[in-house]
Image (cartoon, rainbow, N blue to C red; front, top):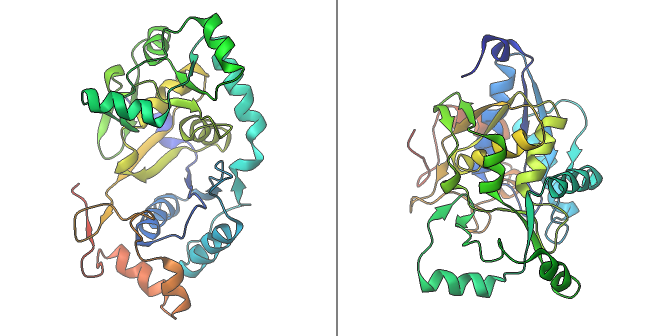
Length: 296
């Protein structure tokens, strides 16, 4: 449970978009909620660019993010933070997890995992179907030999991790106290085959490094918090308070997203739309036709 000491600490909140596409109304809403959460509590609002995926991140998208936030009037404190400047610290944490025997090599491909899924549906976890654990019990010597020539990722052995940490909980200001459940996690990827670090580890390390007191983000990341809490315990990191907010949905009831080509803020901005007026409409829950807020 959250203590009075936690509630009195300095408020530091962040907005952390990925520069792999243009921001849309859903991002504007998320940035507004995080910004207003900080300002209403005399806190700091940080901007962190999550550009660990160098294959998809683009400088022009970074420029658009900065322009969109300024257009909306959501001004951040301090310098913009870039995850791509922190790969060394991520590597140190990965080695620490390896030394603790918390990670194992995974040689599974998308094709092989899809075949496993087709053979029998797997339960859903934060990243989709829970990994079946195919590579979890590979002989370590054999895995090392295969790693010489085969691409592989590194996965977190969640059962082993929870056996080490014991029961864990975390607190959300909207949803209350939460107890993590191993069966909901699955052995998530910590180091992908083609990227130095995965989202789960990077965001956990950065929230600690940046002194984030309250993680304010969408309900779509609610389930992932169990993973982040587990990593915090393994790496002796502080646990922030969480606030998972509702999401903006399109007319079909799906979350607004880049992959669904949701209307971008840059189009509205360059068309002469007032960012200030748009933000006031979002604050008043006066959404465009076809856009709604997910259930509380």
